[in-house]
Image (cartoon, rainbow, N blue to C red; front, side, top):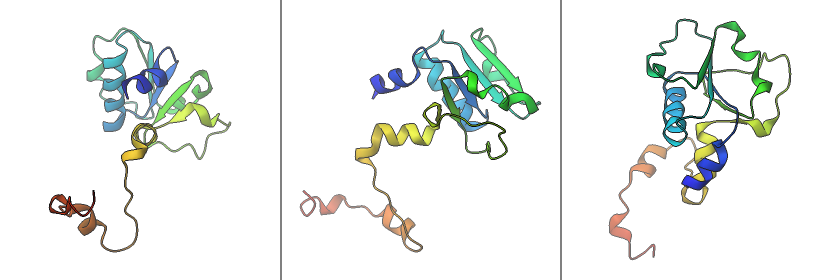
Length: 137
């Protein structure tokens, strides 16, 4: 798994688009793996609290309306769910746009069970199947 993460981020011009909880979590992960890699944070909120970035000299921050203007300058864009690209005036290459959810699905796809439908998801996903081991071997 670590090798796949390194392959995903190493030596790529990376933008974290949106710096709420998920954006900050992405930042911490990338910084742990690559403490010296240049990163850019972009968010529409001009009053964003960037205290978490204090002391990081390998960071660019773009805040306000201009935060979507340079998306094509990056090889990898980690977009958070709160950022909409529906009004983007140019197209982006799909292979550069990603998210935490997409990376999670790439890394753990063989271990994921999806529960869908209108009723019973909470009940089904909270069952304790430990006493059924003999049946499901």
